[in-house]
Image (cartoon, rainbow, N blue to C red; front, side):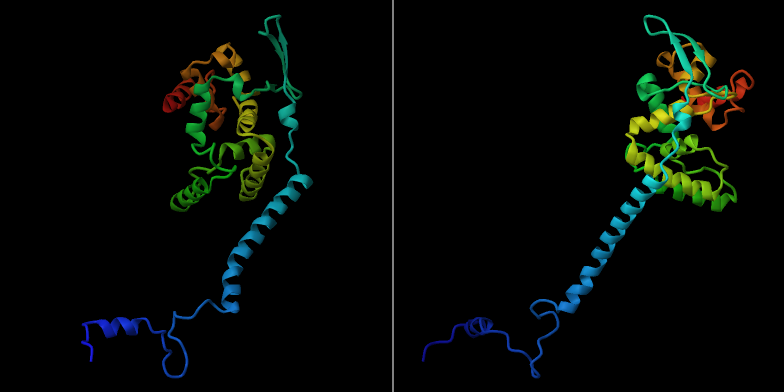
Length: 259
């Protein structure tokens, strides 16, 4: 009779197939594969999420086709009279008497754009037109203070409001959200900045960075220094209260807060 090695029997038994317990059922977790019903149940959540995403995209597409944003204010700019070197000699107001000049991101110095994004919408280059974090923060501040502390509006939402001014209500805020999504689908980030730069109120009948620069500083927007750029970024928050000709102290304080 051959000698029995320690552990030999155990290793031999380990190679035997698993025998089910009495009753023929395998222990939980030892079944091969899930039932068809289980597979179907796990497939539903991603299918529903995909269907919701498709429905949302189709809804936004339908909204864009049926209710496109009104760009008439953006197109109604004043007329410039230039010399042979392209310098502005004179400006005629837009219809309605508003001093407004078409302005692009390339018309202003980089430090003005940097101040604008830092002051109004730090995640401008990353969000799709609406910043959920900013909206949540604004709602939390409103709940704590019992009044509107900050609006949570992105630069894209501000551009939407400048294109189609409305009284500030919850309904108008919802409209701004939808319009912001439309603008992001239609325009590049720099083009959206151009809407803000053209239509931002500068006090009185002035609108836009170029008109504000000529009126308040007597120079083209491309030549604004950081202090002048900071003032023009600050004025649209409270255009009449920060007019440098009527409220120089308030204008100076708003400018300094951005520098």
